[in-house]
Image (cartoon, rainbow, N blue to C red; front, side, top):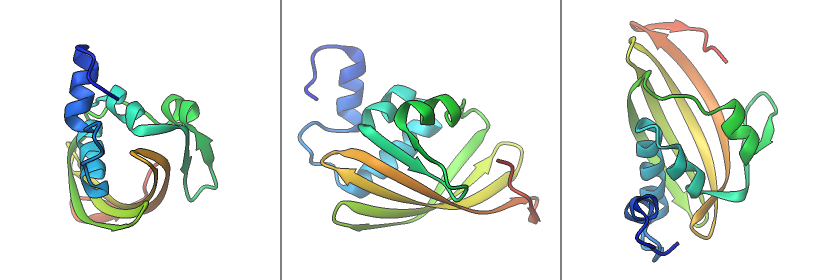
Length: 140
C-alpha cells in the first residue's frame, strides 16, 4: 500500500513498509506493538481479506468474526514479553508472555501463516495463567 498523504496510510506504511523490506519477525513484533497500542486499524491492515483465526476450542473464524468476537481494548495489558520468534519461509511461531496491569500473566504460542506481506492465518495455543506466581485457570 503506497502512502497517499493520508495520515492513517502514512502511519501504516511506517509500521508495515509497502516495499516488503520488513521481515516476518519484524511484522510479528509490529503486530504485537499495534495490539498494545490498541491500533485496530493497523492490525486489520496486516491481515489478509481471507484471514482465519484458530484456537484449541476448535474455532476457525474469519476476519470480521475475529474483530467482532475477539478484539477488545488493550488497556488491561501492561506488556508483552516476546520470548522467541521462529520463522520458516511463510510460516512463523511466536511464544510470548502477556503481563496484565493487575499482575495476572499468561503464556501463549501462536502460529502465523503469511501470504505475501499479509497475515493469512493465526492459530493460538493457550498456555497457563498465573497471578502472583500461582497457577490460575485461564478465562476464555
